[in-house]
Length: 222
Image 1 (cartoon, rainbow, N blue to C red):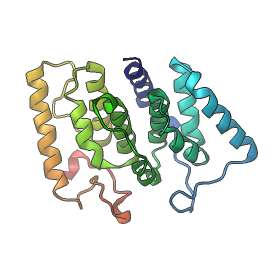
Image 2 (cartoon, rainbow, N blue to C red; image 1 turned 180 degrees about the vertical axis):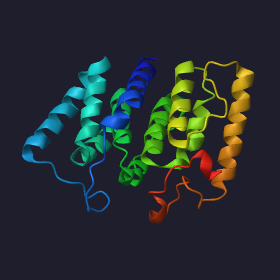
Image 3 (spheres, rainbow, N blue to C red; image 1 turned 90 degrees about the vertical axis):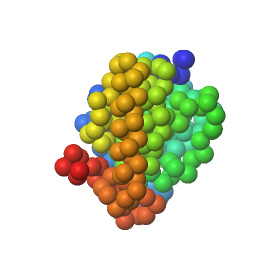
Image 4 (cartoon, helix red, strand yellow; image 1 turned 30 degrees about the vertical axis):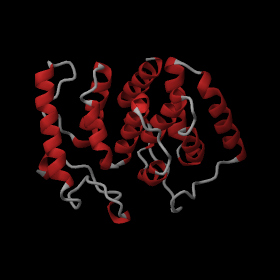
């Protein structure tokens, strides 16, 4: 429950304030050949990584914001933190990676092993939120699953992340009655089924480098 409250705080704050505050660090480097930090910045990144597990509330959110703003030089540290056995630390690293909006992170993040099992659903959901923000639409089914969660905050965060990337809602209300929610979820599932059948449609990520940067669909895409 503590981890869920932390994920909720982090995700809500990032959805509200990081979209305009964070931008990806661009370079001509290839995948996983990240820009090296200066000695001073390396020291700052290492210090922040050591302090992050002991931060709470808005202090944690501010540290996630800082990591996302640092961008590329912090990527190796953040990717390593995703594998931290402390779920709140791993979730914070995922939130920071997603906030960068740097699509080059999709494949390295996909390669990080994720624990299976019901107890780790929140962490997988945080990973799905991060990947969708990075442009990987293959995680949409995980977020649709999040719409069914018994916790209203989890449903709300899943719906917000889906809307943020797809600009679709299908009438879903995280606080609506279960019959109305199920009707909207059925519409989400039908939409995803139709869209996933055609990998060339904008927004459907496939394991092909030429489509990694495809734009997210809008209502105009049909």
